[in-house]
Every structure is written in C-alpha cells, then in structure tokens.
Length: 263
Image (cartoon, rainbow, N blue to C red; front, side):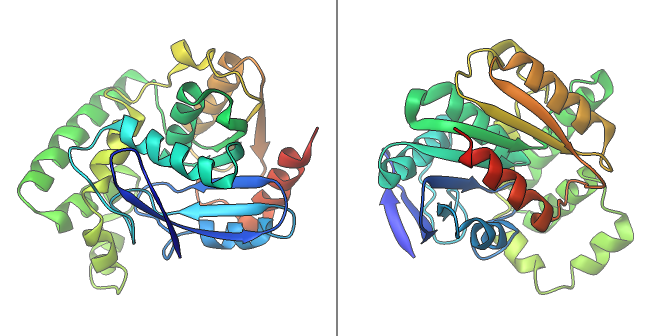
C-alpha cells in the first residue's frame, strides 16, 4: 500500500500494479481496495497498463478529513493522477462514474480518456422524488449513528429484497458496510440533489469518453448513458449485452483495454 496527500491533508491509500499507460479506477458505493470488484479489474488490466486503485476518502486505509465536500474527492483524484505523472485515463463505475465525470469537468487536461459504467443518475420525476426522500432518511440515520439502518436503507434503494437484507445483516461483510456507512452520504452528494443526469454541464467535458450500460439492467441506466453520450462532445455509447449493474469483469476488461489503447 502507498499513500498520497490530498490538498486538505487527507491521506489517500492506493495500490499500483502493471506496466504501461496510467489508468485510475474509481469505486462505487460501499466498495474500496479490499472489498469490491475493482481489485480484480486492476489485475485484468495490469498486463497492458499501470493501474492505480485507491480507497476513496472515508474508506479502507484512507483518511476522512471533515467537513466533506464533493470538491475534496475531486482533489483526491487529482492528487493520485499527479502520482501517475500528471495525466491518466480514468474509469468509474456506478457512483464512482459520477465522481469520474465531475473530475473530468474540473481537472482539465489531467484526464486523457474517460470511461463510465452505469452512473446511476435518473431524471424520471418519480425517481427524483424518491431520491430526495432517501437523502433525507439517510441524513437522519447517519446523524443518529444508526449505521446498520443506513446500509439497509441503501440496499433497499438499489432493489435488494428485504429477506436478502436480513440475511446479509448476519454475514461477515455487514460490519465492513457499517464501518463505511457515512460514505453513503458522499455518494449521494456525488449523484446530486435530485439525481438528474447533468446533461446541462456534460458538454463541457473535453476528453474522449466511453459511456456504458448493460442490456440486462434497469432501463433508466440505458437512458442515462445514452443522454450523457449525446451531451458529451467526444463521447460514444456502448451497450454490454446480457450485463447488469453487477458487470462481469471478464467482459468489461477487454473493452476498457481496447478503448484506453486507442490512438
């Protein structure tokens, strides 16, 4: 494990593996270096790239300087890109895709290529209303230190059946979720106050961008990916057949490798 210091003094933990052009991986909710899919993805990409996989602030071995702001997470990513040599390709999944998009909007030429898998924006009016209720409930639960219930609320939001949540509460992974439950608020901030896709700002992204969704997932993920791809000037939209939000990394890795290798 290595660390880099962000602008506000927060220590950000990361791992580096492989050889070749730099690629930074950005996790989604409740995931970090020792828990989640990105470690496997890093191994799959390492034969062709130098891959940097890091713990977003508040997770794993990274610090969590308060108060939180979206800008601080962008600064964390910028600090890591500086470690790579000053420029890198960036891939983000789920809420990590939202962070990667925000970074592309704010970091200028530091990001040379951007790839996003299913950023969970949803511009449907009903979804926006449900999102605002979720954020209110999440804020109250975290303020009351009810981390167990905060994780359960998030699991409900993403469609996990109640009986599965009850079973997960007794699984070894549950304390890991509880430990980083406060970062669910960070992901909510990343997605935005009303969850709408930021198509009004996406036209300011100036780097080549690949926006992906799975054909077997939620319809709104397709609509969001298509809308962002239309809005970003140098973007393309790709649908991964038979994939859901829990994408098969053996399918995803070759697509990313080919994309990041393109001239």
